[in-house]
Length: 254
Image 1 (cartoon, one colour):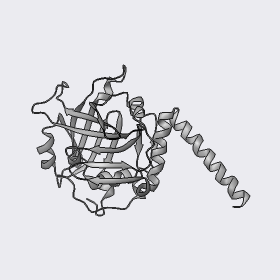
Image 2: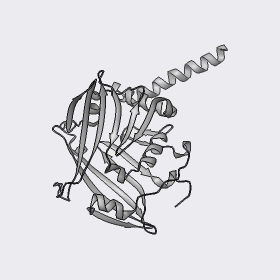
Image 3: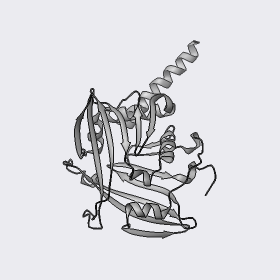
Image 4: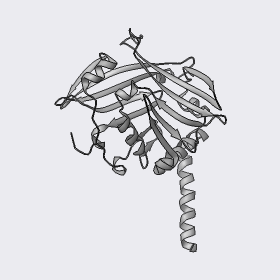
């Protein structure tokens, strides 16, 4: 390699670590950033499995169980011993306007599997969650994270949809979503769409003081007025902000 190219490459590597340090400020954010970098080679570092749930498998895991506690300040609903590691389950239960659990119980879960080294090896989402984040769209959304814009202060990431191919997939109908989630807390009428608001409370045995609001998760679902299809899902899940505009991934504009 020519000296000039070696120097340029060295500067890029140094710059990368400087950027990582500025984004993280601690080892927890650094490992999250390392996972984010892996997204640029998605098929090398990850594998997707879809059954009655959606599972993202980590081929070269970087994040530890302690990282999620440190970042979200929340503890899992269930912590179980499994072969060669542990399994965490976060239960999210629907609540009313007073944040009381609704009857009958409407809930979904997110599972995390950790190996013997306490590194995250798999992250799963239950079938109810897939009603508002269909597998095909969930996968392409994850792939679009590469090159996305990180907002550390707000703990959010804006995906770059230009880096992934468009897909042919059906969007959920409003009637299908309501059949699973029930009536929303409110409905906001906007030009061309209706926004349905839901709230889910994380069932957790412990929350660090000052982070109680992280347990209450709001989900906004935007439905197209013309075809009654779900076009945008935006939510706050255990401190992680997610927003997906499904129309940006469709081959044919809705």
